[in-house]
Image (cartoon, rainbow, N blue to C red; front, side):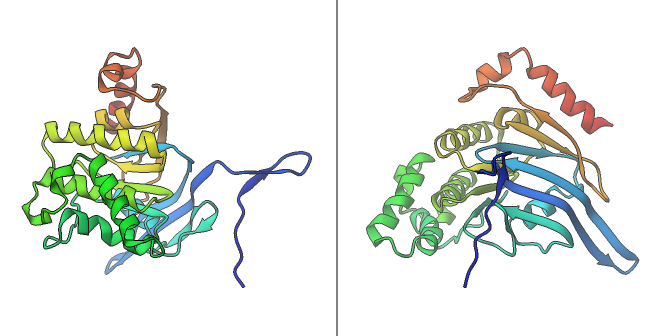
Length: 273
């Protein structure tokens, strides 16, 4: 007999309201054993991310950002503490968490459509073949790949491959979208185009998103909050910056906003100390 975890807050009259917390990291710890003893990457890391929130995470290389994201994805075991999605503990990979990596990791011999269908077929097994194909085509259309459904992944440019990766992640309708520097290997023009595509789809889908980036401007443009991690070892959350720009937002409106350079200075000052 299965049981369902119900997350919520209880008011004074005993009514339970659904919790707004989508992703809860509590006292999170990651240890790697080495010949010289344990190496503690993360220690006592606490972070709550709300439903429909877009959070970017910045910090110096080696502070454990990718380690944390891979633990949320269920790809890396937890050494201590807990990770929960809507109150349900993460015990391994699952369709409730979609991942977009720096390298899209496509099957090179498969077409763009077939690559997206890999996830769709697994997550929606009871949908008809036509329905599953329509889902895959819809998201490929949203990332601007209408003319590339039948092109094999190896025939696509790096930017186009990452578009397929974005389509694949959104197509499985995850509760949480995890992005590990998805635009880090792209030129600045392509990077800007894909940021716009990502935020346009996210504005429509409103999936909780957690994105690692080294780019301060990207962190500000995309996020509701920017989470700053301390340097490792024993990294934890050092500071959190609320971004007050309205949504939907444009790059022009962000750059012209009075608070933009205040936010930027705050993040750079943190990284430089």
